[in-house]
Image 1: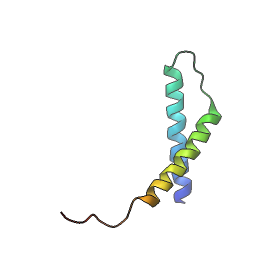
Image 2: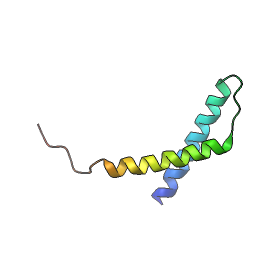
Image 3: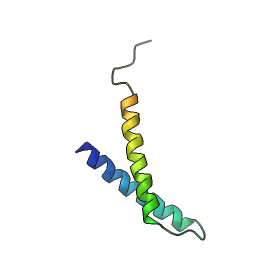
Image 4: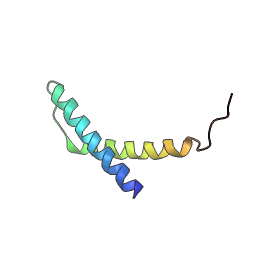
Length: 61
């Protein structure tokens, strides 16, 4: 389920970001597929970062 929800929210947020940026950029048009590809990349990056970051607490200094 976490894979689905992560992709769902990254899909929505990347689509929204793509739409807003294309609306604010003169001469740019909103395109669906590049945003879908970007949302898949964002989802993969999220899971890679969560596996790299350690779960144990930091040592006290």
